[in-house]
Length: 203
Length: 318
Image 1 (cartoon, rainbow over the protein chains, first blue to last red):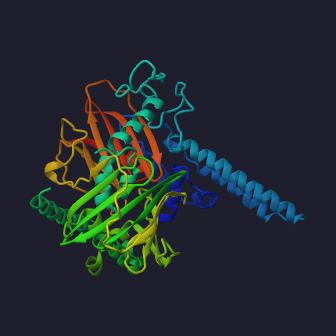
Image 2 (spheres, rainbow over the protein chains, first blue to last red):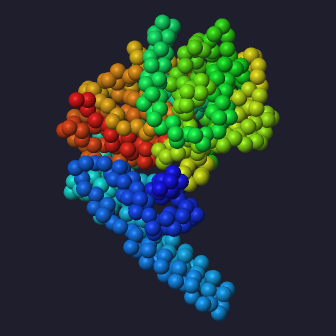
Image 3 (tube, rainbow over the protein chains, first blue to last red):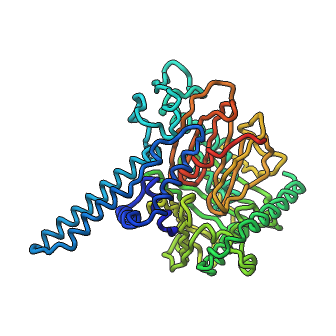
């Protein structure tokens, strides 16, 4: 498996894979056990909370992909009176293959995909029915509770919900970004520009 | 700021870096495809950033947000002084004075590979693939463009435009794995002069810190010694934080991220939160380490997965 493939898998985890990359992954995953193993490894690495088993790791997407690809290639060998129609149908079919595999793969990496979205937590304030982003909330049997911003100053160390953690990350950004910028200014090739990323520069 | 301690600090870094390079020397084969010209440009960029007199106007664009700032950099008698003044937003000013030119921080050491190349080590080329092409004009200057594509999934890519004459970094784009531009920094105007621009109306003036072991700022402080168990290949520590300091920072020469640890006696429900702004990720993870509830925050110019894996690897020192 080459670097390019690693990056594509990574992009898929980041939810940033382009259509082209998806097709390439598709083509390769069909006959390459290494790629499937890499996918599992990437996920495992990111779920390295040792005490919590990760249920979806055993999923093998190869069978479905292979079946889908076989269908597609059979179409290619069939004699076709209406070439144009066949081509249309074929492109639709490859799109369907791409879509179905995307669904399969992304569900496998759902925890990661969720966290990669821009506003991952705001929409879902109900009790988590699947695993949480790190598979922790649910495995502890915790239920999500709406944070009461109105009555308590700030839920600093009692984060009850995903939303509360989102807020916590915002706070930490404001608290720590300047200290990070001090280091970035000395160790990246942009002079003092990293300070421009600090929300509110303190004296 | 004491010169004595600075020099001691810088010496330390040379030692750290050499051991780092020795450890990665075995990977040299990876970079046989590396464009030596690109490495020479990066070397030149790193030096000119610290050694050339310049002043100009720089913009930072992240999504819809555009910031404009004035920067100046002056070299005098073996040390440099620099200043950044925000022309939009908060209007704060950041200054750094009397920074010795021979004080070379790990980020710059990783980029200055002129001699190391000949010893068959390729440093940053183990982390990125380079290509050099003709660049478009930036701030009225002819530029050469260097594309840096990461070799693994743990860092972003960059497209950098360097002044063809001085090697100064005129424009830098941070690029995600999905080939989206996350952040763009560029000079709108630059002049190579030792005239300091007239001061503008500022409310806050911040003296940039120069980290060394004795005065590492302790915004967060841990009560036990802790370690970061894993960082991506090629990342080196930027300073020698005391073991009880709440921060650790790492750089690969281009990307920088910091890890902060807070321990608490309060009960904490495990979970994670994320904020992304341009190329900067802020990832906060609440967890229990050896019976002790902690909050780990990773802030830096790295992808979310890197931040998560680094946070996962934090542990108490045995």
